[in-house]
Image 1 (cartoon, rainbow, N blue to C red):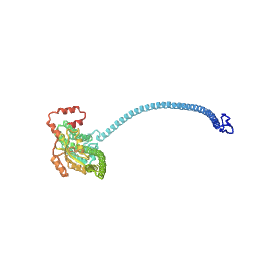
Image 2 (spheres, one colour):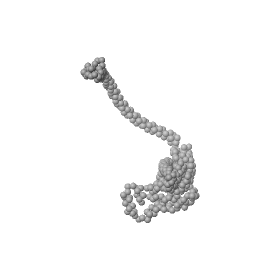
Image 3 (cartoon, rainbow, N blue to C red):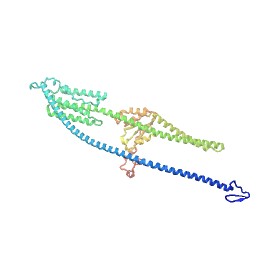
Image 4 (cartoon, rainbow, N blue to C red):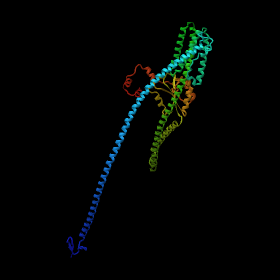
Length: 515
């Protein structure tokens, strides 16, 4: 009977190895051997960890010492640099102080130099003035004798009547105005020459000649200072100037007062014409500005209309897509019902209804495309009896899909009453149609300077004839309805409900809509 040398287990069927150990003890022995190896490995690892920790501690110690030394070196270097910077800053402040002192000295010396230079210039001018006086005396006097009336300097005084300085006036910039001004100037010269022969004594001739020089000089000054919108002031300045010269010359010599009065009457009209010709330059310049502003406004309006049309086109396309999708669904349902033998009349009626709606949508889409990509639009004829009377009409153009929106916009708070519509004319080239109408009505314009103001003074019968002449198919409403204007005339006082709206509403547009 076998027995285990370790656990003393025995039995007939117990198997032991050469060392006398049973299988269980053999397993325990192998586990103990493996545990011993693991322990040895763990001890080795612990030894290595201890060595690594010692090395890491040594490394950290060396790094810390190196860091401290490096920081100390850097701080010393920074301190040295900072000291150098402070020295430089102090030096700069010192130098700036010296520069400021020098600058103040330069300013003081410059002021003194300027003062001396002005005194020297004044003395030099006085010296030249005295020199010129001596020179003139030598020319005009010969040993104390009287002035020679036949001296060449005084022989033809008529050539000296023009002003010494000719100002550069604006009429010179336009050929048409230059021609008109020169023609008027020629008449002025003829008038001056005609009146010059009416004075026989030298004293009267001198008065006349000095007056002419003064008048011409002051006229130039008035023309030079004209601005847009100041023509009435310039004309009044001419009248004030001529009255002043008439009074001065008449007081000086009563014998020539009647002649001077007639002369002033003629020359004042010619000078006024010169003012009007010079002012025409500013009128034409303002007209050009207004045309440019109108062009910019038209471009801005067209851009806004194109944007609105694009938004409307997308909306229509979305609506068209919805109808087409619904059409496809209904067609599929109808085919299915037909296959099943069901009644399809409901589907047919609905498809017919959608087909009509789709046709309307496509028509709107075509209109939008026409307005968007061409010059198509509406020319409108409107009036405002309460604001402008029964002879003033506005002729304008809009490319909006709903032209009535433009009329409502014009009938806003800027006018007391809404506009009446006399005609809406659709045209593939509304820009040309509007331009043709404006050309035919050009002489009837209310505002002849600002061409953006498209108001024309014309009778309604003449306007109707003109519209049918240029567009025979147009519709024209001759009635000046002016409902709010006529109602306002028939009312003695404002009703209480309107007063309540005016007092309580914060939105002016809400009040207008309520009225």
